[in-house]
Length: 353
Figure 1 (cartoon, rainbow, N blue to C red):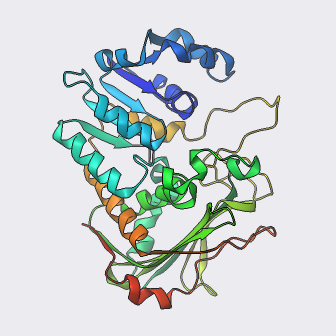
Figure 2: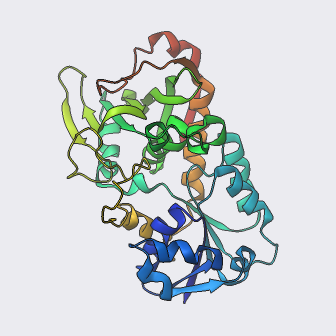
């Protein structure tokens, strides 16, 4: 029996808990302090009897083979460093971003490797059907690819100022949301990605509400990315070919749900949007992807996480800050003409080979 321990009372419970419980030969261990949450959530209460409950968080180090840490990025770093030297844990699964900054993420990876631990990351978006089609688009000779993701983040809807809104804490458009796209782009070895330009779009209070970027792929193809976390209309789209005459590959409201309508206020699994009070909860749509991440037989993702972190660092190094233009009409912030920034950032490269 393979035991998966989970630290994290939010996504750790409504995401990783049901995912782990659905894997044959896996037992889940949770700290006793999470029992109340499991009982209170209608979609989780039936799992209470399947959990091995431990009195305190630190006991997971002695019972878990795989330890999921789905906490704030800074907390994740601290928890990894606090693991006892003689822990039973042989593999760590970290939610994204694994650390607040790319440099901290690289240092954390080095520490995990030095301890001889396996590591996987919660790059759930990379396990979608559309992500599987990205390599063909990226490697087309002279091809052009555009990825546009717009939605209204929970912290903007409710005007909350938690870490998911704060760029410096590992939140906001690039570090919390855009990191998923970077992972999808770097999953496969052998692709060289060079940053042509990147902009962080800040609101009046300094929040990074949107992020735009242009990357050059080996053999001359380009990919332009636009993430807008303060848009009135939820929409996820991938286009191929010239912007004016290209074809649409994907046009959904939710990157995890192809049948979701593109309408204002559409629930979005990836953004923290919630349903109306009293509505019957649905299982999180990322559970299937999380089950793949938790597969006890899956190899460590050290090299993949390192590639995505290298690209993340290159993008941050090349990024400038611009004023965010409110998109009340629902139109996505589009990747701008980055010719002026190309020369400035030509040296910011990520070799994902």
